[in-house]
Length: 294
Image (cartoon, rainbow, N blue to C red; front, side):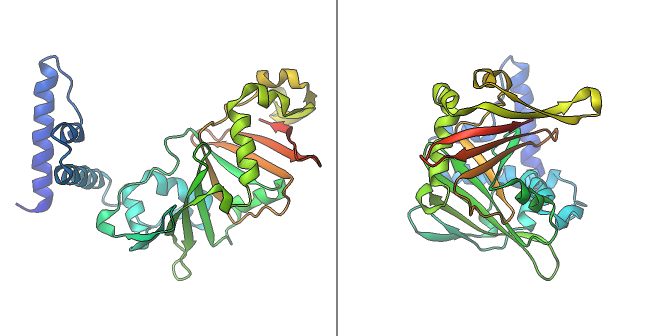
């Protein structure tokens, strides 16, 4: 019995047992739950996870190409990479270099790769810009390197996925993963401010400028933008949902030469909606929200 039929036989057996348990009024547990209950046998757990991963790959259409038509733009490629286990395996340069927080280096072989949900199940992603002009980079087909950063506000660390576009075939490839502390970035001060802004409503209210410039779409005029101002006391009536623990940053090559301005763009992954918050730091070093757009 070859490997594929063996995999299918195990899966069918698992489905049969699940149906029996469910029919008796019980609730079938995931396969890896039983592995944890059986003494945390690491070899058993590894084999079950490998089976799940292999079966997930087999369920994806065999005709799925490893090249996607949206490869020209990283902005389009990264979301397909995030969702597809098959595409991930095809777009990682193995062995993949990994730099750990303590400075140690290692690598991941193809056989050890597990699907990475880069956006952590979020409904939206965050992009940090230094100006509105930089936002055109998201649609720039000449970009050849980019990275996605998972920014952990409370632990003050960043996990980064670094991508490069292959010069021969034009395909985006994951070239490196690394973890760094906030103090190794140019945005340490802003990250610390943003964490408190997102988690402390009193602090947030104190750092909203009055008047706050506010832009929204006019639904009666074919969604033409309407610009006005609101009082800081009205902010919580208009404020978007702000991530409080982990935020992402898709970096298309933007840098942050102006240390006193940050543009935080939050983009819906499924609906295309977006909110933009613009922060400025005054001469005393105090950050304030000065502009909001939804």
